[in-house]
Length: 244
Figure 1 (cartoon, rainbow, N blue to C red):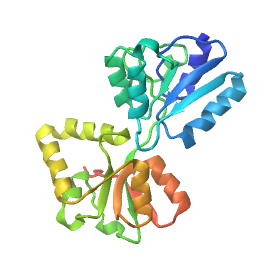
Figure 2 (cartoon, rainbow, N blue to C red):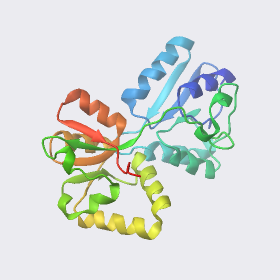
Figure 3 (cartoon, rainbow, N blue to C red):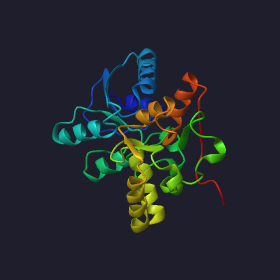
Figure 4 (spheres, rainbow, N blue to C red):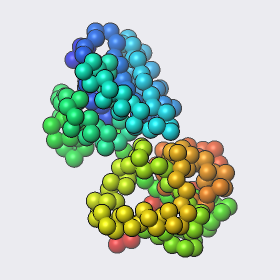
């Protein structure tokens, strides 16, 4: 693969160089939602004449299917760039010696706090974790203002989160364990179960359940909420834990 190919791809995505070169095509393993990532890859093909062979995760196996494939292929990697939706999987792959650092004039323009110290991964986009809610199920004044409030009895059976083993929910839970400490975070997760919080298959599943009114509210990402708001006027979102 010619050096500038990785350069262009890294400009457009969070990427990891992990494989052997090819002059006229690049293989991208991607955990970013296909509806968002594929148009960017196709635009890259049109602009460069380079063929992109993309492997996408499904919504249900978000982040882990592609990651496990990279681990399995460690000694015979088929991938050039890993486009990840979060840095958790990147760090795991790096710890197993599967990724390699990459640096160019363009990557040097990225602020240090948006990339890994030795350039194994570079972050170029951001999204937020929010509470999406159905306006027909709950009023804004009745919403929890803190993630810790999801365990309150008045919200029993009304809320949901995506499976913490997958996708951005993994990153979210890891952040909570870091901030709260293991004991408090574990107790909070036990209390979620007691409060009958739904564990959905994915953030997209949370979006659907809130949209159809099955759940009053749920934790998800801003991109899922924005897609839902295009389809329905019944949903909105808030940022949690904004009080000083």
